Image 1 (tube, rainbow, N blue to C red):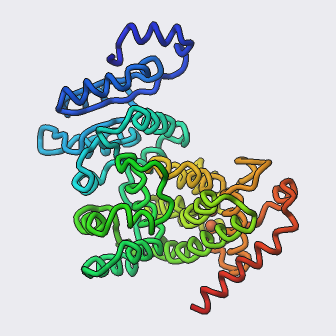
Image 2 (tube, rainbow, N blue to C red):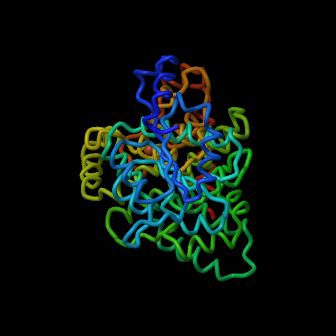
Length: 422
Ligand SMILES: [Fe+2]
Ligand SMILES: [Fe+2]
């Protein structure tokens, strides 16, 4: 079962897949028995995917250089001649390959391989293995621009507000700290929330449901793992520079927290199921994470975007589309897909400016975030980083919910008043 296996090619022809570009996965493990077990578990998929196997880091790099792979599944500690390791080399040389670490030592590997996008327990069942890989193989098609894909794929962590980062580090010295208290600190920060949900949702924890909040994630991971992540890896990082990213993060933090809480309240008022309300809450907190990606990684270009937004009063996603060929919603959702956050959350982020493109028949978490986002801007009057964002009333009318907007506005006002009183 190699990538040039003629029998697989014949079977792909017979299955009518000959013209479809094959999705390619490379598995790397020094232990041949592990590779043999993977081959066996994935045997039925060799007509759908091209799979290659390697038991050495150098050989794996040669395979990656010789043909394009979508996903790399590897051990955390595969060495390369010269002192480097496979994951670091792949991050630098083939950044848009999805990097999945195959692991059986939870705490060690999360801490040891923070350059991974996702983690997968080596002994997971065939269904988990297939669904994790299937999802990873779809990701490349979600962002068309190769340069942006590479930029997002290189991200290991996003910058946090220095004050929250300091609070996190200080709290970790407290032996009495509970997971819940830790979750509350992390929930104040967009970057830390995204990172902790990435790790907690990794399939290798063997959970049968998604972890949808920082508090839940902190309970699952435990204080010790989070302490190790915070102190010995680049998983959480404080913003080092002032200027654009600093002022954007401060504004974004407050706007994002309120949007998450209001989106969940709107979801509840419209009788969305609990899972969708949870997705509205965490999706609301993360809805503008793409702005953080752009401001931290392309500060000069993003400054031009924001100056245009201020000058012309147009929504920032329109200027972003002209400037980058994608919006902060596209870029944020791509990062969250790559980090294996729940699909509902990723979709809510992807469609928060265009909920009608997601569903024209049902009120969704994306629609709740769309409304909460616009109402927060309307009621606070703060729009330096977003431009003119308004509720899509045609969409609300289409769903028969135009009459509910005053109630949503009341819920948003209530939340803003509560925050001002605190
Ligand atoms: Fe947005
Ligand atoms: Fe927003």
